[in-house]
Image 1: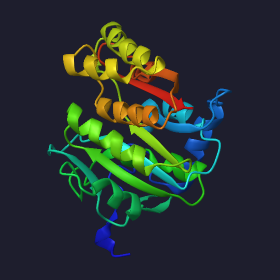
Image 2: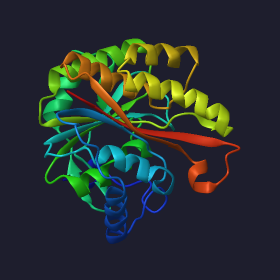
Image 3: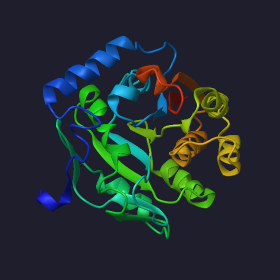
Length: 273
């Protein structure tokens, strides 16, 4: 692979350990602490937070613990924290790299998603320094064997873009494909206020009500940086007739820091059929 086509780690050593052995040990520890709940089979996707592992790694592990079989391809849906662009960007390079190794991009699914779309394109927009995809991959490298990824950054989470993405994904996925919606919840509210906002998202996910979730996000009744990613994953699941959902954990940064004056919310969930 040409070096410029490999997306090098941007947040290793800050969001998660740069040492491969330390990173593996940390993830194994989180997974051992968060035993998977029974009855979750035939996953369509998971919701996983994307803060630094010290803040949200354990919450993410609740979702990753539901992975009970091999998946050939994992589609990771991410918001764009550092770049605004219209549309949805699928990484146009060859692979994503973490301290645990290099994971190839599934070019066939990428081409299928961008085909005949004015809004979904292959590029580097949104991928250069974005952490929300990168922090998911080490969990997958620990749990899965050989797999490919489809790294997708949503530059604009308007409804029309999310709807198109969901319909395209539904055509591309099969039983060997998993979708990850990478999202945190409310940012920098006092804990009591954050809890009210985040509880609304939890209720919508638990009730498999992505339409209400989208309306609540649009009206400002709740907030999630990857809210569009969650809606796209759930709508895809609906189309492929996997309509069960379970919220596995909801926490906030104050649970780690002890400071509840301004918190960031985290949630993990599984969508299955």
